[in-house]
Structure formats: structure tokens, C-alpha cells
Amino acid sequence: MLHPDWEYLNELESNLPKNKCIFTKFGTGGLRLQVTHQQQPFNARDCFKQCEKNIIHTDQNVNSWVVTPNFYGSVTEEKFPKTMQTGMRYRFHKDDKADGIPLSFLEEWLAIDPAIDPKEAILIIATGIEGKLGVSDALKKALKDKQDQGAIKAYYIARSKEAVRLHNRCIKEGKTVFTFIHMAG
Image 1 (cartoon, rainbow, N blue to C red):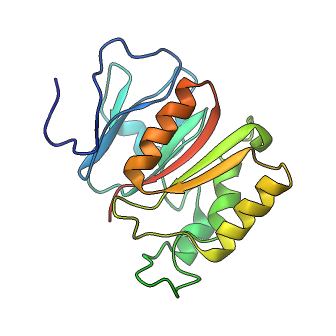
Image 2 (cartoon, rainbow, N blue to C red; image 1 turned 90 degrees about the vertical axis):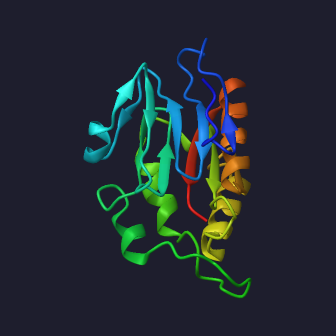
């Protein structure tokens, strides 16, 4: 049943495609995604989320999620120690070159799913519903360099609602996708 709380994405959950991790619901209060049979949670606290019919529903206390072909979970110190130490800070001014998602995030993100060759992956980074999180200039440069060198297939930086739709489109086209979704501002 469609629900008014899902402001940005509200797809029907009947006849979901098998073996394709897609988002079906997205709003300021959370998100829902269909995980595939091979995907496992990579943070201990994600193991205890309530699952029903292969759908994961997050709570409002989790602001950032990562999805790869084999894993999904929230950004915590367990898998992102350098990133959490550096911190992800909102970028309120265009002059804030260092604020946003730090460079350390990229290395830790790609290390989550070593079975996937990054050369085949599209990386999608969502900067929040209003785009306030931003991406550090160092991370932008590293992403561009990796794409230019063929170390990753492509990357996209977008606001969260556009990133969720882009993720779903790429997955439905059979592409390998690593997605970071920030759910707050």
C-alpha cells in the first residue's frame, strides 16, 4: 500500500524483481530496499533490523547507508574508521573545500566488497535530501582520477532522491553499483 510518508520514492512492492537490490521507498524518515539473496549486512547492528519479505526498513537514527552487490549497511566505525574519525561535515559554503565526505571514505567503501572489481562498478554518492553534505574536493579529484585511469567505470554525485532513482535505473540495466545514500539534509 502506498504511504504518504515516502515523499521522494514510493514504488509498489508487488512483483519485485528477483536478485536486484532496488529501493522501493525513500523519504526523510527512512528508506526501504529489497536485498538480494547474496547480500549480507556488514554492520552488526544491521543484522537486527526487522526484515519482512526481503525488505529492509531503516530507522530515523541511521543517516547514511551503503549498498554494494554483496553487502549493505549503515556507515559506522566498524567499516569506516578513518571516515568516522575525520568526520562527514555539512558543506554550507562553496568555499569549504575540505568539508563534506572525506577522501578516506572511498578506500573504505571499496574495501567492503572485495569480490567486486571496481573497474566494473558505478559509484553513486548521495549528498543528502537537500545536498548539504557535499563531497570534499580531495574525494572529487580521486573519483575523477580513478575514472580517468579506468579504476572505476563511472561515478555520480547527486542529491539523495536523484541518487536513489539512478541506483534503481542502473541496477535494472544490469550494472554493478556501489551506492552511498545520506538521508538527512
